[in-house]
Length: 178
Image (tube, rainbow, N blue to C red):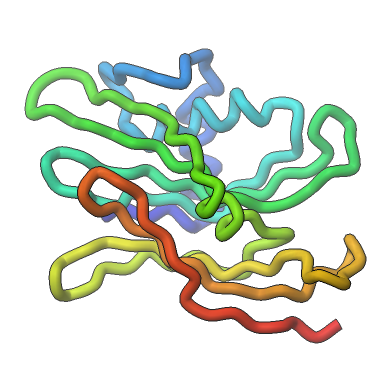
């Protein structure tokens, strides 16, 4: 499992990526899946102020993995919109040849769990039995009676890759004080 949470590591990945033009499905010849997926994100969010919070890979076995980026955005197309979310890419790396990279569309359930006003912590971890890599994301969203300025609905979400599918669950919830 590779983790990139330090700002300078992420900045160096952005510089290395070169903001190239690539399709949503890519057959990477020379670049790592992390770089290719970052190129896709920077292209998609070119009209926004886009900030990476963290990123890493979750192993799924059988030369499959998931690249996961946690990011914030604001001011897209000059608007007054903002938030934080997660993008997930499926990577199949054969023993020889190019990796196949595909952006996974979020399910409604996953989108509800991983859309935040802001993210406070991202932790990539590995459980002992069975060996499974996963990520826990702490964030805060708008509560039922919250003003746009002041979200209070906190939650920790756990994401993992199992049997070729992304699984997610809410680990805990809390209310932030105003």
